Length: 301
Image (cartoon, rainbow, N blue to C red):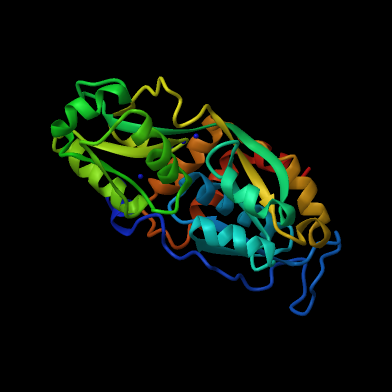
């Protein structure tokens, strides 16, 4: 699973509300509900709070689709409400489903009303990460060195799949009873990670890749010899209950969507090191698109 000036992004977090409804773009009329390609003109694109790879991919597709005449509303939400909302068409699509492990429970629960549009990245993984100079290299060593990390593992949102995996598998399987998993938000975790690494202090956090933190901070993943966090996963796009009928063309485009980790990291770093406040990445993304035009043109070719 994955990867700013950093201080500005962390202070405001990547969970800023992004529910932006654009004015009618070129190629559509203010009253039109359907585009010439047969798709509904308005796309409600759900974005998981704090999941930077999904935020980056969603802003990319927002720009791409608005150039094609769509109106794209980015709707920030926590993981569980997104899957429920997809089944009722409150959201049309989400680009950040990790399978076969992280979001498997949600897909099992709501799968009859969801459409898997395929994986666009196959190099996603969950991890417990520590500062690069920490004197341990494996989760097996964590409990015996609890004092080094203040008796805590700094986590992210309570409802995240990563949190569930650490709580239900990693902690019991390794017999971790000397450290407590502290959950709050991804932004809060990154703030603590930044503070600790700048101060030369030890810290253990739950993290995933691709994520820009691996480029920004001196950190390393702890080995997981018991495999409690699973193998590398695929990041899938999932459509909601009526997605394929409402968006036949977009269905085809997303089914063909591919983005390797290097390209994704490039986009994330451009966005999250841009110094913008997190509410509008339009200009940054458009600049990135101009530098990667051949790749972007292929998304809708």
